[in-house]
Amino acid sequence: MKKAYVFPGQGAQFVGMGKELYDASAEAREMFEAANEILGFRITDLMFSGTDEDLRQTKVTQPAIFLHSVILTKTLGADFTPDMVAGHSLGEFSALVAAQALTFEEGLILVSKRAAAMQKACEKEPSTMAAIIGLPDETVEAVLGGIYDVVVPANYNSPGQVVISGSEQGVDVACEKLKDAGAKRAMPLKVGGAFHSPLMEPARLELAEAINQASLNTPICPVYQNVDAKAVTDPVQIRENLVAQLTSPVRWTQIMQNMIADGATTFIEVGPGKVLQGLVKKVDRDIEAYSA
Image (cartoon, rainbow, N blue to C red):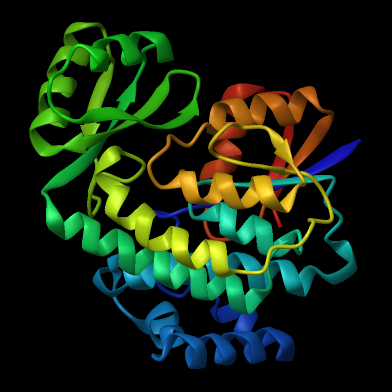
């Protein structure tokens, strides 16, 4: 039996997240207060008692989800026994800290810089994302390949669910063409911009400098990274994949399939929400999946 710990990305946030951890654990309180100092604002106030609008700000959302996941991992103590880890988009940073490849402090600084860089890139050009339900990956790829505007697969979330990303016009055209091709649904998403698309190139360049300066250690277990869905333990490769992540698709379906092929029998979601458990079940309904 092998345990796979998985860490959620943007979209899993909710008002009140992390409050129980803060109240129940002195170690958690210390980490949350350290995060307030590092970030230069009291993110705990926004997490515990802010508004939905507060939490939707990219500069808040990403550090908030990272903190919830990483601090929850810390409170698990000896119960945290990973055979492998993975994180969805932003969650990859949480996974790397949990696997001791990055320190808590460096992970938080990188996540904060990532959020700021992505926000700037979003403001440069109007862009968006949409969820496409009910088509094979290959059909989505073929349709997008025939569209002139910028639009690409961004998240391969589960069989039959792909999120696309690009310019507003590109995504609009793609949604119509994909519905014509048989998609059950093509739903625009309320996001700040075109994550995991070529439009994030300015953010990738900005974040690359910070990632290349960060100290990366050999993780305590394999990390299945978004860019190629493969198990990685080499810090050099981890760094390269992290840099490439912002403009590359999240290959979550393939990560789940590879983890299961490598012996994962239990998936434990660490952080806010239960989205990843649902995605695991869409890959293999017989796999055990639950929250930490």
